[in-house]
Image (cartoon, rainbow, N blue to C red; front, top):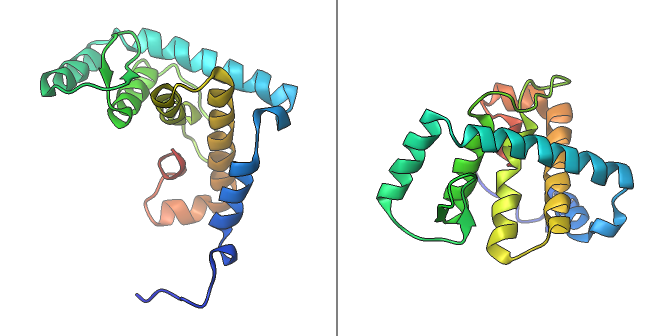
Length: 167
């Protein structure tokens, strides 16, 4: 497959999405969006704290502890610090472990809370604030929800899940 070199980056939708995301600030968010994001975070954190004490999570966490290493990102309920990717994976497992997390039925029966651990790890790794976390979560949620609404048939036809593509 050859790459069309006659197009500039501005010819791709990814350019518009990246530009929009790079220019969005916490101050531009509506109070309703901020409130919804906080509820979304609280619900997911509650699920994660309960999930962190489940046997399957403990087994997985022990495996990663045995592999060693250090990092800057915390795994819920354990105090274990690891690299951002592993922390995001383990924290997503904590959120999903008891199957009490959210579900989105409109276009894709999936769980938007799966996307929270990625911006959380990025924020912790870089010493960012809660406002940054809310902004990151809302950006990711907006990308995910739009992907499910406009591209659902494409994603499933190609065996991709929108949560995984965005998160």
